Length: 514
Image (cartoon, rainbow, N blue to C red; front, side):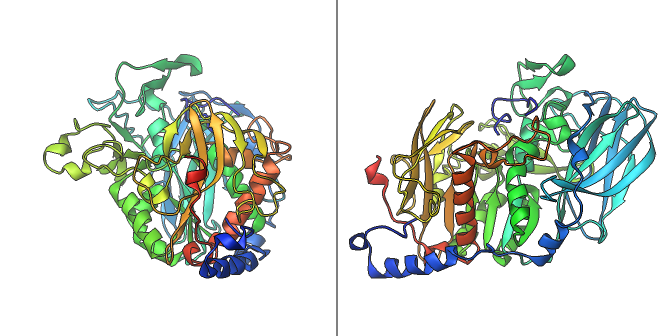
């Protein structure tokens, strides 16, 4: 993996429980779930399968990286719908550039299909703006080129590969969404967290920043407001941000299976969260940390109505943010003070950008998930628990089975001292550097299920792409990738069929561990 800019950006049920432990209604639910999990297609869509039959292009990951200041670019939106236009802003020392537009997926194991190419684009060099009083680096560059999103751009995750005359390249990510979709799954990219860790221009929401020649230095002060109107740093996966390490392996698997998916960024969750009711499951990817009140409310209320949610990463819904309008429209500036020093505290304390678990919010993520943030030192081996459960079905594991080095990055765990829902079930209980990491699941009757992997490495360990550049996309890990993939398929199979609380209610077992 290429180096990323911060300690966290680097990160990458009960079918066989003894009958005497179950009420008859739960036994019926589990019998029903067994047949659900046997379905081979996990709720698939013909268009996704057909799309991935197009020839792939593995060249998207080959070439030389362009350093910050030589080839930088960003888009005016994080996502666009059919009929909209995406504008791209590029600063380069090259007289001309080429833009190759890739839709990301499976594509015979090559990971991408080139859907468009723009050649002969005139290059211009633009200044890096000085940060303002909030640490905000907000570019106001002129438009370099644009793409009209028509039927040749199917919904999905896209990377624009910019190339200069020296065969160096840089990525700009964006999403194409279908606002009329009623797909089973919502695949949601965590662009708010990407931007929080983005060090381009010298400031992020952390103290780490990009220094000369790609080094990481430390600021005395961090930004409290960051802008989407700037490129992602070269240290951040060459402009692709957290997509390749923390999100792509799940997308690769999902499109190989042909899942019935629609594609959002978490900015879309903020704007269109009421549309979650059209879908059966939300897939939160590897690092989903930064949430506005509208984002959190959309998720928690949808779970109560029956939406299933899989948090495949750790440290989810941890920082509270709000958005402001900036250049290129609404939601282009993101604010996070992490304290009541936020000026809005005086007039509307409910919007103060503290951590969600802190006053005046007092809403830890455990209140609806049973899982709470534990720390950043989450490296360790996964120790399997409740191996007869639906999650581990077909994985060939026993209680106490150890998956070496399966865990890493940040971790979550069950904490009996904080507010939790009833009937939290633990599927993995593992010693990690900072304590104990837990895989948790909760699903109450008529409500959606909430799965939490408890680790920043779940998606990273899914990576299994031998045809791609191994320096970017890791190979499978023997004894780890296969069972993690099996468990992921079981999650997708269960969550594709409506409220998991009606199909596979959770069975409390936390007393065995705490």
